[in-house]
Length: 304
Length: 153
Image (cartoon, rainbow over all chains, first blue to last red):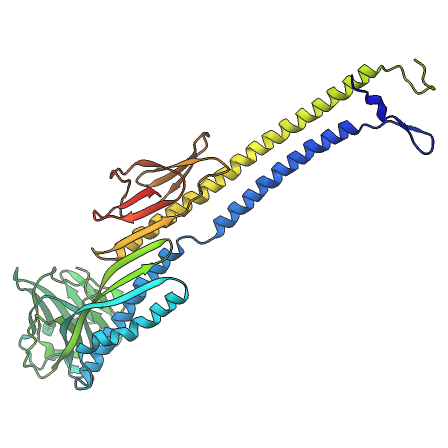
Protein backbone atom coordinates (compact mmCIF):
# COMPACT_ATOMS: atom_id res chain seq x y z
CA UNK A 1 0.00 0.00 0.00
CA UNK A 2 1.27 3.41 -0.88
CA UNK A 3 2.67 5.44 1.92
CA UNK A 4 0.51 8.53 1.73
CA UNK A 5 1.77 9.79 5.03
CA UNK A 6 5.35 10.29 3.88
CA UNK A 7 4.39 13.78 2.76
CA UNK A 8 3.74 14.68 6.36
CA UNK A 9 6.50 17.01 7.33
CA UNK A 10 7.48 19.53 9.92
CA UNK A 11 7.17 23.17 8.93
CA UNK A 12 9.84 25.65 9.93
CA UNK A 13 7.73 27.03 12.78
CA UNK A 14 7.29 23.58 14.20
CA UNK A 15 3.61 23.02 13.13
CA UNK A 16 2.82 19.88 11.37
CA UNK A 17 1.44 20.46 7.79
CA UNK A 18 -0.61 17.81 5.98
CA UNK A 19 -0.16 18.03 2.16
CA UNK A 20 -3.15 17.10 0.04
CA UNK A 21 -1.13 17.42 -3.17
CA UNK A 22 -2.65 14.56 -5.09
CA UNK A 23 -6.20 15.80 -4.77
CA UNK A 24 -5.35 19.34 -5.75
CA UNK A 25 -3.22 18.15 -8.64
CA UNK A 26 -5.88 15.88 -10.11
CA UNK A 27 -8.62 18.49 -9.66
CA UNK A 28 -6.45 21.11 -11.28
CA UNK A 29 -5.78 18.77 -14.15
CA UNK A 30 -9.51 18.15 -14.66
CA UNK A 31 -10.25 21.88 -14.66
CA UNK A 32 -7.43 22.43 -17.15
CA UNK A 33 -8.88 19.82 -19.49
CA UNK A 34 -12.32 21.42 -19.29
CA UNK A 35 -10.93 24.90 -19.97
CA UNK A 36 -8.86 23.61 -22.86
CA UNK A 37 -11.89 22.00 -24.47
CA UNK A 38 -13.88 25.21 -24.07
CA UNK A 39 -11.07 27.26 -25.58
CA UNK A 40 -10.92 24.94 -28.59
CA UNK A 41 -14.66 25.19 -29.07
CA UNK A 42 -14.61 28.94 -28.74
CA UNK A 43 -11.84 29.10 -31.30
CA UNK A 44 -13.91 27.06 -33.75
CA UNK A 45 -16.89 29.31 -33.13
CA UNK A 46 -14.80 32.43 -33.79
CA UNK A 47 -13.40 30.88 -36.96
CA UNK A 48 -16.91 30.05 -38.12
CA UNK A 49 -18.08 33.58 -37.42
CA UNK A 50 -15.12 34.85 -39.42
CA UNK A 51 -16.00 32.64 -42.38
CA UNK A 52 -19.64 33.67 -42.09
CA UNK A 53 -18.87 37.35 -42.40
CA UNK A 54 -16.70 36.92 -45.48
CA UNK A 55 -18.42 37.84 -48.70
CA UNK A 56 -19.14 34.87 -50.92
CA UNK A 57 -19.29 34.48 -54.68
CA UNK A 58 -16.85 37.36 -55.24
CA UNK A 59 -15.59 36.17 -58.60
CA UNK A 60 -19.08 35.24 -59.78
CA UNK A 61 -20.30 38.71 -58.89
CA UNK A 62 -17.28 40.17 -60.67
CA UNK A 63 -18.20 38.14 -63.78
CA UNK A 64 -21.77 39.48 -63.67
CA UNK A 65 -20.36 43.00 -63.37
CA UNK A 66 -17.99 42.43 -66.30
CA UNK A 67 -20.91 41.17 -68.40
CA UNK A 68 -22.96 44.27 -67.55
CA UNK A 69 -19.99 46.58 -68.09
CA UNK A 70 -19.24 45.15 -71.54
CA UNK A 71 -22.90 45.51 -72.50
CA UNK A 72 -23.15 49.12 -71.34
CA UNK A 73 -19.75 50.10 -72.77
CA UNK A 74 -20.49 48.66 -76.20
CA UNK A 75 -24.05 50.08 -76.17
CA UNK A 76 -22.68 53.49 -75.34
CA UNK A 77 -20.08 53.14 -78.11
CA UNK A 78 -22.77 52.21 -80.67
CA UNK A 79 -24.87 55.25 -79.73
CA UNK A 80 -21.89 57.62 -79.90
CA UNK A 81 -20.65 56.14 -83.15
CA UNK A 82 -24.07 56.37 -84.79
CA UNK A 83 -24.40 60.00 -83.73
CA UNK A 84 -20.92 60.77 -85.05
CA UNK A 85 -21.69 59.11 -88.40
CA UNK A 86 -24.98 61.03 -88.67
CA UNK A 87 -23.13 64.31 -88.04
CA UNK A 88 -20.20 63.68 -90.37
CA UNK A 89 -20.14 60.50 -92.37
CA UNK A 90 -16.91 61.44 -94.12
CA UNK A 91 -14.93 61.43 -90.87
CA UNK A 92 -16.64 58.46 -89.24
CA UNK A 93 -17.53 55.06 -90.55
CA UNK A 94 -19.24 52.05 -89.06
CA UNK A 95 -16.34 49.99 -90.43
CA UNK A 96 -14.21 51.49 -87.61
CA UNK A 97 -15.98 49.41 -85.00
CA UNK A 98 -13.50 46.54 -84.92
CA UNK A 99 -10.47 48.82 -84.52
CA UNK A 100 -12.26 51.05 -82.00
CA UNK A 101 -13.05 47.96 -79.96
CA UNK A 102 -9.40 47.59 -78.90
CA UNK A 103 -9.48 50.88 -77.01
CA UNK A 104 -12.76 49.88 -75.37
CA UNK A 105 -11.56 46.55 -74.06
CA UNK A 106 -7.97 47.28 -73.04
CA UNK A 107 -8.71 49.17 -69.78
CA UNK A 108 -10.93 46.32 -68.56
CA UNK A 109 -8.42 43.62 -69.46
CA UNK A 110 -5.54 45.51 -67.82
CA UNK A 111 -7.51 46.06 -64.62
CA UNK A 112 -8.26 42.34 -64.38
CA UNK A 113 -4.64 41.41 -65.00
CA UNK A 114 -3.58 43.65 -62.12
CA UNK A 115 -5.96 41.67 -59.90
CA UNK A 116 -4.53 38.34 -61.03
CA UNK A 117 -7.51 37.39 -63.15
CA UNK A 118 -7.64 36.57 -66.81
CA UNK A 119 -10.17 38.57 -68.83
CA UNK A 120 -10.45 38.52 -72.59
CA UNK A 121 -13.01 40.60 -74.49
CA UNK A 122 -13.13 40.09 -78.24
CA UNK A 123 -14.98 41.66 -81.12
CA UNK A 124 -16.80 38.97 -83.13
CA UNK A 125 -19.04 40.66 -85.67
CA UNK A 126 -21.46 43.50 -86.23
CA UNK A 127 -24.81 44.00 -87.91
CA UNK A 128 -25.21 47.20 -89.84
CA UNK A 129 -28.37 49.23 -90.07
CA UNK A 130 -29.80 52.64 -90.79
CA UNK A 131 -30.50 55.41 -88.33
CA UNK A 132 -33.73 57.24 -89.15
CA UNK A 133 -34.29 60.67 -87.58
CA UNK A 134 -36.27 63.83 -88.15
CA UNK A 135 -34.38 66.51 -90.05
CA UNK A 136 -35.04 68.88 -87.15
CA UNK A 137 -37.75 69.61 -84.63
CA UNK A 138 -40.98 70.19 -86.54
CA UNK A 139 -43.60 68.15 -88.32
CA UNK A 140 -43.03 64.42 -88.10
CA UNK A 141 -43.74 64.06 -91.82
CA UNK A 142 -44.35 66.61 -94.53
CA UNK A 143 -47.59 65.00 -95.67
CA UNK A 144 -50.96 64.19 -94.15
CA UNK A 145 -50.98 61.04 -96.28
CA UNK A 146 -49.45 57.79 -95.02
CA UNK A 147 -45.66 57.92 -95.26
CA UNK A 148 -43.81 54.63 -95.21
CA UNK A 149 -40.56 55.31 -93.38
CA UNK A 150 -39.13 51.82 -93.51
CA UNK A 151 -40.26 48.81 -95.50
CA UNK A 152 -39.73 45.13 -94.69
CA UNK A 153 -37.09 45.35 -92.01
CA UNK A 154 -36.35 42.44 -89.74
CA UNK A 155 -35.47 44.45 -86.63
CA UNK A 156 -36.01 47.94 -85.27
CA UNK A 157 -34.72 49.35 -81.99
CA UNK A 158 -34.66 52.59 -79.98
CA UNK A 159 -37.86 53.89 -81.62
CA UNK A 160 -38.53 57.17 -79.84
CA UNK A 161 -40.82 60.12 -80.47
CA UNK A 162 -40.25 63.42 -78.67
CA UNK A 163 -43.60 65.19 -78.93
CA UNK A 164 -43.90 68.97 -78.91
CA UNK A 165 -47.46 69.38 -80.12
CA UNK A 166 -50.24 66.96 -80.97
CA UNK A 167 -53.49 67.38 -82.94
CA UNK A 168 -56.98 66.87 -81.55
CA UNK A 169 -58.44 63.37 -81.33
CA UNK A 170 -60.36 63.75 -84.59
CA UNK A 171 -57.15 64.63 -86.47
CA UNK A 172 -54.87 62.21 -84.59
CA UNK A 173 -51.51 61.09 -85.90
CA UNK A 174 -51.16 57.33 -86.30
CA UNK A 175 -47.99 55.26 -86.25
CA UNK A 176 -48.56 51.97 -88.05
CA UNK A 177 -46.27 48.97 -87.62
CA UNK A 178 -47.25 46.28 -90.06
CA UNK A 179 -46.09 42.70 -89.70
CA UNK A 180 -45.43 41.94 -93.36
CA UNK A 181 -45.67 38.19 -92.84
CA UNK A 182 -49.04 38.05 -91.06
CA UNK A 183 -50.22 41.42 -92.51
CA UNK A 184 -51.42 42.41 -89.04
CA UNK A 185 -51.07 46.06 -88.15
CA UNK A 186 -50.17 47.49 -84.75
CA UNK A 187 -51.50 51.01 -84.43
CA UNK A 188 -50.35 53.75 -82.07
CA UNK A 189 -52.60 56.84 -81.99
CA UNK A 190 -51.29 60.20 -80.81
CA UNK A 191 -53.55 63.13 -79.94
CA UNK A 192 -54.29 65.81 -77.39
CA UNK A 193 -57.45 65.44 -75.29
CA UNK A 194 -59.86 68.17 -74.18
CA UNK A 195 -57.84 68.77 -71.00
CA UNK A 196 -54.75 69.56 -73.08
CA UNK A 197 -53.02 66.32 -72.10
CA UNK A 198 -50.97 64.31 -74.60
CA UNK A 199 -52.56 60.91 -75.18
CA UNK A 200 -51.02 57.71 -76.53
CA UNK A 201 -53.49 54.98 -77.41
CA UNK A 202 -52.58 51.49 -78.56
CA UNK A 203 -54.66 48.34 -78.53
CA UNK A 204 -57.00 49.59 -75.83
CA UNK A 205 -54.19 50.93 -73.60
CA UNK A 206 -54.47 54.68 -73.06
CA UNK A 207 -51.60 56.66 -71.55
CA UNK A 208 -51.79 60.39 -70.82
CA UNK A 209 -49.38 63.01 -69.60
CA UNK A 210 -49.47 66.72 -68.98
CA UNK A 211 -45.68 67.02 -69.17
CA UNK A 212 -44.29 69.33 -71.80
CA UNK A 213 -42.38 67.68 -74.66
CA UNK A 214 -42.88 64.12 -73.40
CA UNK A 215 -40.90 61.29 -74.97
CA UNK A 216 -42.69 58.18 -76.19
CA UNK A 217 -40.27 55.26 -76.28
CA UNK A 218 -42.14 52.78 -78.44
CA UNK A 219 -39.44 50.08 -78.18
CA UNK A 220 -39.28 50.23 -74.39
CA UNK A 221 -43.02 50.85 -73.85
CA UNK A 222 -42.47 54.02 -71.84
CA UNK A 223 -44.33 57.33 -72.18
CA UNK A 224 -43.02 60.36 -70.27
CA UNK A 225 -41.14 58.11 -67.87
CA UNK A 226 -44.19 55.94 -67.12
CA UNK A 227 -44.80 52.42 -68.38
CA UNK A 228 -47.07 52.45 -71.42
CA UNK A 229 -47.28 49.17 -73.26
CA UNK A 230 -47.71 49.81 -76.95
CA UNK A 231 -48.41 47.11 -79.47
CA UNK A 232 -45.28 45.85 -81.17
CA UNK A 233 -45.33 43.01 -83.69
CA UNK A 234 -43.74 39.74 -82.70
CA UNK A 235 -40.29 39.02 -84.06
CA UNK A 236 -40.58 39.15 -87.82
CA UNK A 237 -40.34 41.41 -90.84
CA UNK A 238 -42.25 44.65 -90.44
CA UNK A 239 -42.82 48.07 -91.99
CA UNK A 240 -43.30 51.40 -90.24
CA UNK A 241 -45.58 54.17 -91.54
CA UNK A 242 -46.95 57.42 -90.15
CA UNK A 243 -50.38 58.72 -91.06
CA UNK A 244 -51.14 62.43 -90.69
CA UNK A 245 -47.63 63.03 -89.36
CA UNK A 246 -47.74 66.67 -90.46
CA UNK A 247 -50.28 67.40 -87.71
CA UNK A 248 -47.78 66.49 -85.00
CA UNK A 249 -44.62 68.39 -84.19
CA UNK A 250 -41.64 66.81 -82.53
CA UNK A 251 -38.79 64.52 -83.48
CA UNK A 252 -38.59 60.83 -84.23
CA UNK A 253 -35.60 58.53 -84.22
CA UNK A 254 -34.92 54.82 -84.50
CA UNK A 255 -32.34 52.41 -85.83
CA UNK A 256 -33.44 49.69 -88.19
CA UNK A 257 -31.73 46.57 -89.51
CA UNK A 258 -29.99 46.91 -92.87
CA UNK A 259 -32.51 44.50 -94.41
CA UNK A 260 -35.13 47.28 -94.34
CA UNK A 261 -35.69 49.72 -97.20
CA UNK A 262 -35.54 53.27 -95.86
CA UNK A 263 -35.61 55.15 -99.14
CA UNK A 264 -38.41 57.45 -98.10
CA UNK A 265 -38.97 60.56 -100.18
CA UNK A 266 -40.43 62.55 -97.30
CA UNK A 267 -38.45 65.77 -96.74
CA UNK A 268 -38.81 65.59 -92.98
CA UNK A 269 -37.03 62.25 -92.65
CA UNK A 270 -33.27 61.88 -92.66
CA UNK A 271 -31.32 58.62 -92.79
CA UNK A 272 -27.70 57.75 -92.12
CA UNK A 273 -25.53 54.64 -91.89
CA UNK A 274 -25.50 53.09 -88.45
CA UNK A 275 -24.39 50.10 -86.44
CA UNK A 276 -27.42 48.04 -85.46
CA UNK A 277 -25.68 45.58 -83.13
CA UNK A 278 -22.25 44.23 -82.17
CA UNK A 279 -21.43 40.68 -81.10
CA UNK A 280 -18.63 40.24 -78.58
CA UNK A 281 -17.19 37.37 -76.62
CA UNK A 282 -16.10 37.55 -72.99
CA UNK A 283 -13.85 35.01 -71.28
CA UNK A 284 -13.12 35.44 -67.58
CA UNK A 285 -11.02 32.95 -65.63
CA UNK A 286 -10.02 32.95 -61.96
CA UNK A 287 -8.73 30.13 -59.74
CA UNK A 288 -12.32 29.14 -58.94
CA UNK A 289 -14.37 30.30 -61.91
CA UNK A 290 -14.34 29.84 -65.64
CA UNK A 291 -16.85 31.96 -67.54
CA UNK A 292 -17.16 32.39 -71.30
CA UNK A 293 -20.06 33.84 -73.20
CA UNK A 294 -21.06 35.70 -76.33
CA UNK A 295 -22.92 38.97 -75.92
CA UNK A 296 -25.05 40.62 -78.60
CA UNK A 297 -25.41 44.31 -77.90
CA UNK A 298 -28.32 46.13 -79.57
CA UNK A 299 -29.29 49.00 -77.26
CA UNK A 300 -32.99 49.78 -77.04
CA UNK A 301 -34.21 46.61 -78.71
CA UNK A 302 -37.82 45.85 -77.75
CA UNK A 303 -38.56 42.86 -75.52
CA UNK A 304 -40.74 40.78 -77.80
CA UNK B 1 -1.21 4.38 18.18
CA UNK B 2 -0.06 7.47 19.92
CA UNK B 3 1.93 9.88 17.84
CA UNK B 4 2.76 13.00 19.79
CA UNK B 5 -0.95 13.92 20.30
CA UNK B 6 -1.62 14.64 16.59
CA UNK B 7 -3.23 11.38 15.66
CA UNK B 8 -7.01 11.63 15.75
CA UNK B 9 -7.57 7.93 15.62
CA UNK B 10 -8.13 7.84 11.86
CA UNK B 11 -6.49 4.92 10.31
CA UNK B 12 -4.22 5.35 7.33
CA UNK B 13 -6.41 3.11 5.20
CA UNK B 14 -9.60 5.05 5.87
CA UNK B 15 -7.90 8.40 5.24
CA UNK B 16 -6.50 7.15 1.95
CA UNK B 17 -9.83 5.67 0.85
CA UNK B 18 -11.65 8.88 1.66
CA UNK B 19 -9.11 10.82 -0.39
CA UNK B 20 -9.60 8.51 -3.35
CA UNK B 21 -13.40 8.64 -3.13
CA UNK B 22 -13.52 12.42 -2.87
CA UNK B 23 -11.11 12.75 -5.76
CA UNK B 24 -13.11 10.35 -7.90
CA UNK B 25 -16.42 12.06 -7.16
CA UNK B 26 -15.01 15.48 -7.97
CA UNK B 27 -13.34 14.20 -11.13
CA UNK B 28 -16.44 12.41 -12.38
CA UNK B 29 -18.62 15.42 -11.55
CA UNK B 30 -16.37 17.80 -13.40
CA UNK B 31 -15.98 15.56 -16.42
CA UNK B 32 -19.69 14.84 -16.74
CA UNK B 33 -20.61 18.52 -16.30
CA UNK B 34 -17.99 19.60 -18.79
CA UNK B 35 -18.99 16.78 -21.13
CA UNK B 36 -22.57 17.95 -21.41
CA UNK B 37 -21.44 21.57 -21.86
CA UNK B 38 -18.97 20.53 -24.52
CA UNK B 39 -21.55 18.36 -26.27
CA UNK B 40 -24.11 21.17 -26.43
CA UNK B 41 -21.46 23.69 -27.56
CA UNK B 42 -20.20 21.26 -30.17
CA UNK B 43 -23.70 20.84 -31.59
CA UNK B 44 -24.23 24.59 -31.61
CA UNK B 45 -20.91 25.20 -33.37
CA UNK B 46 -21.62 22.37 -35.79
CA UNK B 47 -25.05 23.78 -36.64
CA UNK B 48 -23.57 27.25 -37.19
CA UNK B 49 -20.82 25.89 -39.42
CA UNK B 50 -23.31 23.87 -41.48
CA UNK B 51 -25.55 26.91 -41.79
CA UNK B 52 -22.62 28.97 -43.05
CA UNK B 53 -21.50 26.27 -45.50
CA UNK B 54 -25.08 25.80 -46.73
CA UNK B 55 -25.55 29.50 -47.27
CA UNK B 56 -22.22 29.73 -49.10
CA UNK B 57 -23.31 26.96 -51.44
CA UNK B 58 -26.75 28.55 -51.95
CA UNK B 59 -25.12 31.92 -52.75
CA UNK B 60 -22.80 30.29 -55.29
CA UNK B 61 -25.65 28.37 -56.90
CA UNK B 62 -27.72 31.54 -57.30
CA UNK B 63 -24.74 33.47 -58.69
CA UNK B 64 -23.99 30.74 -61.22
CA UNK B 65 -27.67 30.66 -62.20
CA UNK B 66 -27.66 34.43 -62.76
CA UNK B 67 -24.43 34.27 -64.72
CA UNK B 68 -25.66 31.38 -66.87
CA UNK B 69 -28.91 33.13 -67.73
CA UNK B 70 -27.16 36.42 -68.57
CA UNK B 71 -25.24 34.79 -71.39
CA UNK B 72 -26.37 33.26 -74.65
CA UNK B 73 -26.40 29.69 -75.90
CA UNK B 74 -22.62 29.47 -76.07
CA UNK B 75 -22.10 30.34 -72.42
CA UNK B 76 -19.63 28.31 -70.34
CA UNK B 77 -19.81 28.57 -66.55
CA UNK B 78 -17.73 26.37 -64.28
CA UNK B 79 -17.34 27.25 -60.63
CA UNK B 80 -15.45 25.56 -57.78
CA UNK B 81 -17.10 25.86 -54.36
CA UNK B 82 -14.67 25.24 -51.51
CA UNK B 83 -16.67 23.88 -48.60
CA UNK B 84 -14.91 22.32 -45.56
CA UNK B 85 -14.16 18.57 -45.73
CA UNK B 86 -15.34 18.14 -42.13
CA UNK B 87 -17.57 20.13 -39.84
CA UNK B 88 -16.64 20.01 -36.13
CA UNK B 89 -14.32 17.15 -36.96
CA UNK B 90 -17.07 15.09 -38.55
CA UNK B 91 -17.81 14.19 -42.14
CA UNK B 92 -21.14 15.40 -43.47
CA UNK B 93 -23.39 15.00 -46.50
CA UNK B 94 -25.19 17.52 -48.66
CA UNK B 95 -28.72 16.72 -49.89
CA UNK B 96 -30.01 18.91 -52.69
CA UNK B 97 -33.64 19.19 -53.77
CA UNK B 98 -35.37 21.65 -56.10
CA UNK B 99 -35.53 24.43 -53.51
CA UNK B 100 -33.40 23.39 -50.54
CA UNK B 101 -29.88 22.41 -49.58
CA UNK B 102 -29.65 20.21 -46.48
CA UNK B 103 -26.40 19.56 -44.63
CA UNK B 104 -26.21 16.82 -42.03
CA UNK B 105 -23.31 15.15 -40.18
CA UNK B 106 -22.86 11.44 -40.89
CA UNK B 107 -23.33 10.31 -37.27
CA UNK B 108 -25.65 12.95 -35.91
CA UNK B 109 -29.40 13.50 -36.29
CA UNK B 110 -28.72 17.26 -36.44
CA UNK B 111 -29.24 18.86 -39.86
CA UNK B 112 -29.51 22.35 -41.33
CA UNK B 113 -31.75 23.26 -44.28
CA UNK B 114 -30.99 26.31 -46.41
CA UNK B 115 -33.47 27.46 -49.08
CA UNK B 116 -32.28 28.67 -52.50
CA UNK B 117 -33.86 29.81 -55.74
CA UNK B 118 -32.48 28.98 -59.15
CA UNK B 119 -34.18 29.28 -62.53
CA UNK B 120 -31.93 26.57 -63.91
CA UNK B 121 -32.43 23.21 -62.17
CA UNK B 122 -29.59 21.65 -60.17
CA UNK B 123 -28.79 18.08 -61.22
CA UNK B 124 -26.16 15.46 -60.41
CA UNK B 125 -24.09 13.59 -63.00
CA UNK B 126 -27.04 11.25 -63.64
CA UNK B 127 -29.42 14.13 -64.29
CA UNK B 128 -31.39 13.64 -61.05
CA UNK B 129 -32.83 16.75 -59.43
CA UNK B 130 -32.83 15.26 -55.90
CA UNK B 131 -29.51 13.82 -54.85
CA UNK B 132 -26.86 13.56 -52.14
CA UNK B 133 -23.17 14.38 -52.17
CA UNK B 134 -20.41 14.06 -49.58
CA UNK B 135 -19.34 17.33 -47.99
CA UNK B 136 -16.20 19.00 -49.37
CA UNK B 137 -15.19 20.84 -52.50
CA UNK B 138 -17.89 20.91 -55.18
CA UNK B 139 -18.04 21.95 -58.80
CA UNK B 140 -21.01 23.73 -60.40
CA UNK B 141 -21.12 23.50 -64.19
CA UNK B 142 -23.61 24.80 -66.72
CA UNK B 143 -24.60 21.97 -69.05
CA UNK B 144 -25.81 22.16 -72.63
CA UNK B 145 -29.27 21.14 -71.37
CA UNK B 146 -29.53 24.43 -69.46
CA UNK B 147 -29.08 22.76 -66.09
CA UNK B 148 -26.42 23.26 -63.44
CA UNK B 149 -24.56 20.04 -62.70
CA UNK B 150 -23.24 19.66 -59.14
CA UNK B 151 -20.53 17.15 -58.40
CA UNK B 152 -17.81 16.47 -55.85
CA UNK B 153 -14.27 17.32 -56.83
